[in-house]
Image 1 (cartoon, rainbow, N blue to C red):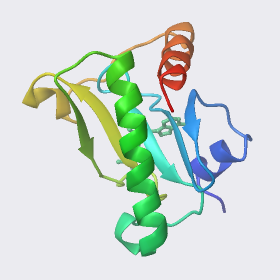
Image 2 (tube, protein in one colour):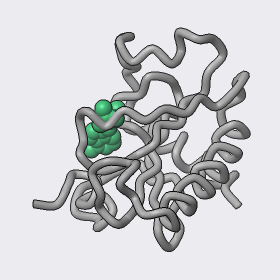
Image 3 (cartoon, helix red, strand yellow):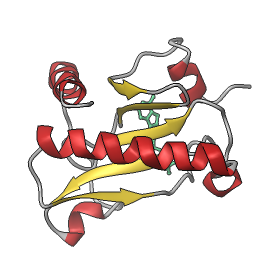
Image 4 (cartoon, helix red, strand yellow):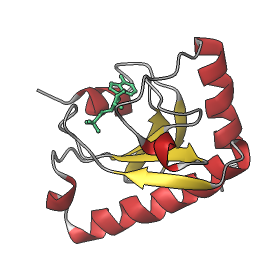
Length: 131
Ligand code: AMP
């Protein structure tokens, strides 16, 4: 069975798309830890990040860097935090999170509530800054 992220990439499930490359896809996390929380996913479904073959792994990180640059322009912050968890969705992904303090990366914190309109506008703003 395809992962929920594969179904998003195929357009079978809606998402707030930020950007895509030939091999990778970026969209907003539906339960954001911070405004602009974005997921970076390889289009080729592999569960565990460190099982992704080298060329795609490098593509993913290069793509994540480009998205992070766009994200920082769209959501002013101290840094873009990067983390990998993968305990919920078995399709390798990198979390990019705009942060100003250590606790902004705390996944045990309650998630933000954002309206569909806010998420849509935010995705469009990040996308507009993506080169
Ligand atoms: P983890 O696998 O532990 O890294 O967590 C998976 C992340 O994917 C969580 O932050 C979820 O909020 C997020 N997520 C799960 N389903 C969706 C979805 N349909 N659209 C966007 N984000 C999602």
